[in-house]
Length: 531
Image 1 (cartoon, helix red, strand yellow):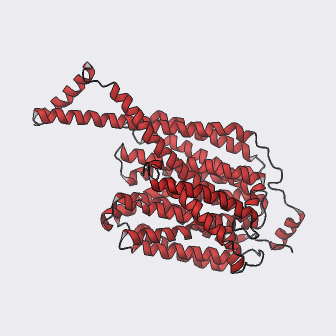
Image 2: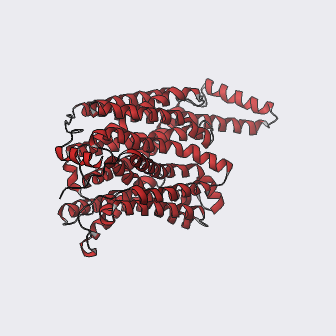
Image 3: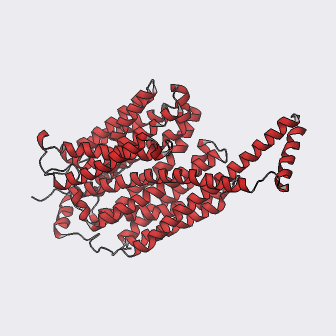
């Protein structure tokens, strides 16, 4: 049976595109907007820092559990219905989060919000991809990429502004009007593809669902909480890592042998998609890792506010937005994806090594500007070619399955990236601290001169000599801490730069695919009929 074309034209396609982008933005902004409000939540709800950290962790776990299942759920309930239901769940849970009276309620509602939000990102990508004809998919991914790349950057400054001028519940309430409008537009304009008949309850791969939830949920917990709980010295982290490993093993076995698998792993036989999922993981590492590290550095070491730290990232986001349509147009003209990806990774290397060079204990905001512009250029040249390469040779239901894989790998890449960065920083911080302390022997004349100078400064301000000396030693210790921290931040930038540099030769060895924008006769007829 000939599949109905989902390609849209004119104002209808514009409305569908805007709706999908807003939904993608809702999900991504909400994953980072909360970060700057944790301190206010902690005080307002009477929670500890460890407890309030679950506000982020619960959302991420809900997200990563649902993403691989989105294609199956879309087929089971109809894409329009599932997408609209996900928006409603996300919107209702946003209201409940804002009205939470305790940390347990807030964490529960954030988990449910994550289940709704996970579908928004992947299904938005599928809807946009299928609304454009194959020869314009590069441009469609450029439009979708605006939300995915800009979203993590918008979260911190928006959250900082809301917390500073209103109260933390409003970071959730702003989702409500957008969610209501998006639901109505989805029900009115989005169409569902005609997939195979729905599965009965007895045919549903319940074992696959359970194993998937266990595998990715446990893994996400390990990545989110590992550094804080000292990794494998924690029985909980060790147990969940083992559970994740075996659940993933049995999940893969189950999905390859089940009659009606919840996740169609066989789609990964598509060469372009398999390469694209690996590249999506690397992209997530760089995107979320760099978005995490710069605000952390500027706030913890330079003393900036959340709003100042977030605003720093805006020019880079605007640069990426400017690049998206240019890269989309280049792809439509036949420029090979692997060349753009290699160039984007090269530019991202330049950004990373530049970042390492400007790190000091008092770096000014001007020093970041051009470095972050370069980051924006690199990200703009990575996202669209990687996504287009991944989905370029997929058709029908495979597009949703492919989008789910790339979305999950981008999310896991970000989680792995943040986990590796925090662990690496903690380790390097100790190395640099020990190295600096070894050079500050008290019998060293330079050390004595520094301590004496600081002590005299405190005495001149009216401090007693013994207290002044103790304060001088504390000040020296703090200077050592700051310098060790700066060196560890520099190491992180070098680590990311080297990782991307190593990938470049492998990308250039990928052979181009001439089928990327080639329409079959049947597809041309369907597009003409739809027009």
